[in-house]
Amino acid sequence: MGRGKFKSKPTGRRHFSTPEDLVAGTSSRPRSFKQKEVEREEEESEEESGEDSEEETTKTKGTQGVIEIENPNLVKPKSLKARDIDIGKTTELSRREREEIEKQRAHERYMRLQEQGKTEQARKDLERLALIRQERAEAAKRREEEKAAKEQNKAQAR
Image (tube, rainbow, N blue to C red):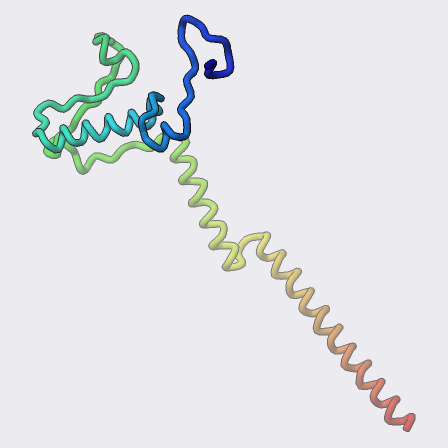
C-alpha cells in the first residue's frame, strides 16, 4: 500500500500516523523540535537541581567558544572596586547634552516670564485679551438696552 503523496524513493518514504496510532501513542513519528527542546531543558534542570554545579559554563555566540583570538582592538570592560571609585569626581557632559540642558532651562525661564506677563508676546496677548473683554462688555450692554427697548415697546403697545 502506497503511503504519502509522492512515489517511493530510496532516500526515504513518507509515513503518516493513523488516528489509532495517535490515540494509542505508538506512532513512529518523531516528536517536534519544541518538544525535544523542552525535554532537554527539563533534563538539564533535573541534573542541575540534583548536583551542585561546580563549573559555570557560559554560552557563547557563534565561533567565540571555538576560537580564542587575542584581539588588540578589543576593549575589555574594567571592573572597578567600591574603594577605587571617586565619589567627588563628576563626569563632564557632552556638547549635545549641555546644549539640551541649556535649551530646557531657557524654555522654562521663558515660560515663567510668560506667566508673569513680562515678555513681548505675553504683553500683546494681554492687550488683545483686554480689547476682547471690552468688546464683549459693550456687546452685552447693547443687547440689554435693545431688550429693554423691546419690552418698553410691548408695554406701550398694550
